[in-house]
Amino acid sequence: ETGVTQTPRHLVMGMTNKKSLKCEQHLGHNAMYWYKQSAKKPLELMFVYNFKEQTENNSVPSRFSPECPNSSHLFLHLHTLQPEDSALYLCASSQGIGIQETQYFGPGTRLLVL
Amino acid sequence: AQSVTQLGSHVSVSEGALVLLRCNYSSSVPPYLFWYVQYPNQGLQLLLKYTTGATLVKGINGFEAEFKKSETSFHLTKPSAHMSDAAEYFCAVSREGFQKLVFGTGTRLLVSP
Image 1 (tube, chains in turn purple, green):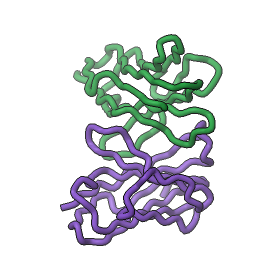
Image 2 (image 1 turned 45 degrees about the vertical axis):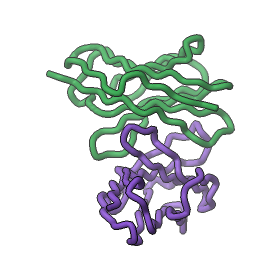
Image 3 (image 1 turned 180 degrees about the horizontal axis):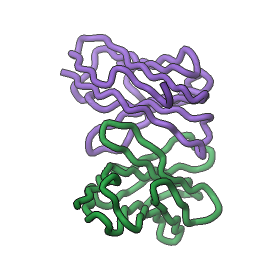
């Protein structure tokens, strides 16, 4: 595997389900990110981790719970989601969190909440 | 506060024609500017970025962009479109000391034969 991988690629869940999204980066980076991409809206940064520590939580509802066990893996735990949470969830990584750093994105998980 | 405006949610060109995708930004301090491309069913990929120095930035796949401070613009161009350029393009802005990238809403480029 190379680059940034995300699983699953598609997910359908009911509002009462609990599921998790997984992201893995094979680039030796230290920073990882979760973004939400909704139709007709700008990409929204959700969380940032640097060396496994959360450095940014962009006022994300608590029904989204991130976990970063090491610099290569990032999870997004989902519970009691709402239909408006349906979107493409993108993971990204970068060498550091300096803004000149290039972020490398995974292909995303397309989530549908029924 | 920073923001990005991409004029035109869709741009259509013929193969071989000039590609021009517009991006205007607002930033109270010197910005860092980025263009990303997203092909269908894929994540975003960096095309080019401006941090400091030369205002004309060359990127991958023959794209380039020019930072014009007086016009607060960072338009993306390519002299001759190829069918493989069909994708969605995102402009983004940030600045020194600010961890976030602020993205525009994207422009979908359609290339016809």
